[in-house]
Length: 277
Ligand code: SF4
Image (cartoon, rainbow, N blue to C red; front, side):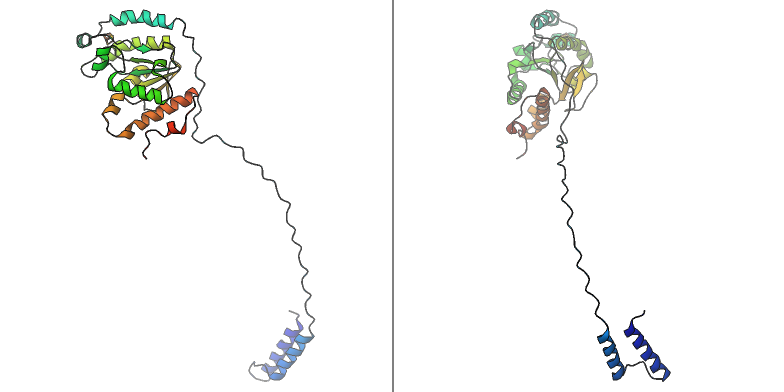
């Protein structure tokens, strides 16, 4: 506190106190202060500080990441060529067409519905059991369910003739097939799968899923049967009965997942089917 101006003020105040006066500055004191302030050399102006801009730092571009929800799958298993598959299926069909393991179904059926399609199909559709239409025609997935399946296959950009179609239970039940009937017929389906060796199996409905996997599985989540990817999805008959046009969307999402897994191109139009507008 060696400021001369402050020293003068201090001394002046002390003098006022010694005189018993109040600490009010007189005009002369103020004049002295003013004189002192005037003699004080002005503080040098601070030198301007040179602000140097840092050299621009090059920020590396981030490496693009794959889409967050992009699924990654193991490569599809190699499979044998179609040579001999038709003959093997024909050989298997003999005992199946003559099968009488389920007395109730033998009584309710007109014929055994073995399965039909391309023996070398990439995609095999598996349903639960034949209905009245299938029993009459002798082929799985005809009638309304068959029309819906054809529409789905063609919307995927495929042809119905390129697929193979079969049911777990091969004789028409009047009600739902019993667990015993499902168990009796499932070995035939397994033999069909082993011959065809499809790249993907689509299991339509809980019975088809349970027969192949031995347990129920939520739709849309990949499973495997003997190394072959299985897509559990909805029962076509349930979708036919549902008046909501968007009820088919979950099944369609499963079909999109199949196309992705097969490495087939998907258009924006295909991605937008059955979405609420
Ligand atoms: S449902 Fe299958 S196991 Fe039963 S009688 Fe028909 S073919 Fe045979």
